[in-house]
Image (cartoon, rainbow, N blue to C red; front, side, top):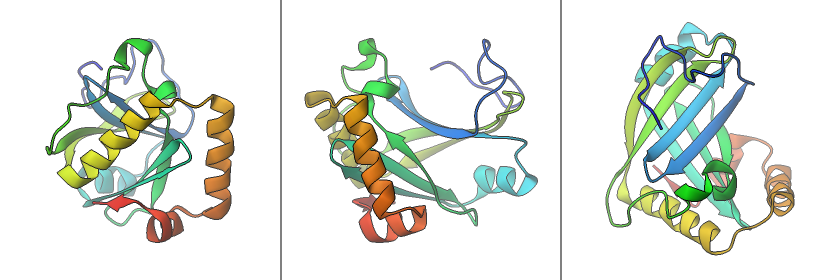
Length: 174
C-alpha cells in the first residue's frame, strides 16, 4: 500500500471505479476502501467523524466484513484472501498476538478517483484475532472462486440485508 492523501487520486493509474467496497489485509496493513459515486456531505461527514461499528462473519471458507459509520446504514464487503492479496503477500496479512489492528478507511469518489476521506481506526484485539484466524484458515485451506461464489450466494440468500446479517449471524462485533 502506498501513502494516501485527501484530495489526491487513490491510484495514479486509474481515475474511475465501480461503486463498491474493498477490504485488503496484507503485511503492510489493513485497508477498507469505499468507492461511492459523488459522495454526499452526509456520507463524507459520517465516514470522517461517525462512530464506527464492525461485524465479522465467516462461513464455508469466505468472510464478510460489515461496517457502518455513525448514522449511515450497515454495508458489507466479502473477503477472500486469495482475491485480496498478491502471492507475495500470502505469508500472512498481520502479525499474530493480542494487539489492536490498525485499519485505514478511505472514501473515494468513484467518478473521479479522488480521496475524500482518510481515517485511521483500530479493531480491538478480540475482533482483530477473529480476522487473523479467518485469514490463516483461508491461507491453510484455500477455496476456488467458484466455491467462494457459491458460499457467498448462500450467505446472502440467508441474510439479504446487512443489518440482519450483523444481528443474527456475526461471529464477532466491535
